[in-house]
Amino acid sequence: MADKPPTFAPSKSRRLITRRRVLVGALGMPALIGSATTGYAAGIEPLSLQVTYYGLNPPGWPAGRRLSITVIADLHAGGPNMGLARVRQVIDLANAQNADLIVLLGDFVATHRFVTEVVPHAAWSAELARLRAPLGVYTILGNHDWWHGLSSVRGALAAAGIPVLENNAVKLGRAGEKFWLAGLGDQLAYPLGRGRFRGVDDLPATLASLTDDDPAILLVHEPDIFVQVPDRFALTLAGHTHGGQVRVPFLWPYWVPSSYGARFAYGHVVEGGRHMIVSGGLGTSSAPIRLGVPPEILRIDLGAALPSA
Image (cartoon, rainbow, N blue to C red; front, side):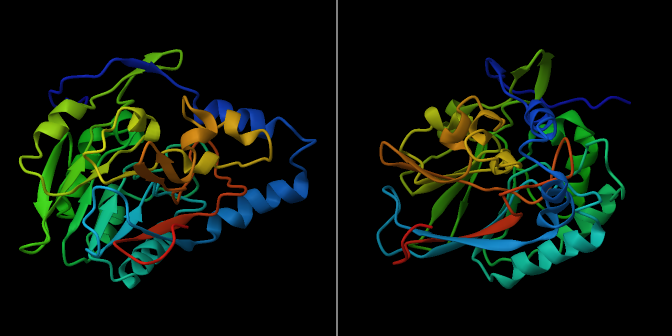
């Protein structure tokens, strides 16, 4: 039976450079990617794992109020580079950060044609169920979740006890330190053909769910929405781009799956006093390779005295 999506106020259609076009271009340039580089991109870098740290004090976040967040983006569970043992490693490393809050930014299953190990929904969700944080674990959905077995992904997250935020928000924190955690619906939920999509994102509804002036953090899958995000949100967290996944000098910005190229490809973005952090993610899509963008989870410390990474 086909998935029956929930009712949303859909956003306008969008055009987007897709990662498939990115990687077809990358793999078709032997002058830039030789056999040794290709071997590294396929067999070494995708199997690495690092924690990337950010410490920041963005406007809109109360000075001196400490909050630590671990971010898991773009898991894409499935071999060769994200088999079940690897998913366990990711979860163990995330728990080891001992953060106040853990957030997931969508795209849970590998859907490329090179999958060598299928990780069933029940298996990856059982690993996610092991995540622990004092303020809880929350998620949003990504475009691949919408495109490939939406109801199964929703069911797996429900079985893991992880709430999905979609154009709404939840109040978290102790008395005197309350904040809103909001999640936006996916911006590419419905493919319309030829690089065009219709999203289920509703930023006005998400804003309307913030019923007081406590500070707010926004979770989005695709970073392109940042051009519309108001400074009501102290911080936006995004995934989707994989940092370009194949980061070839001078050329990679044109291959990032974003309408804005390198502008929102990766890392800490500050525009007009508004802050966004884009994760390079963990898994792969279109092809199981990474070059110049090692898999990562994020540890973010708000209200910290540390400089931003």
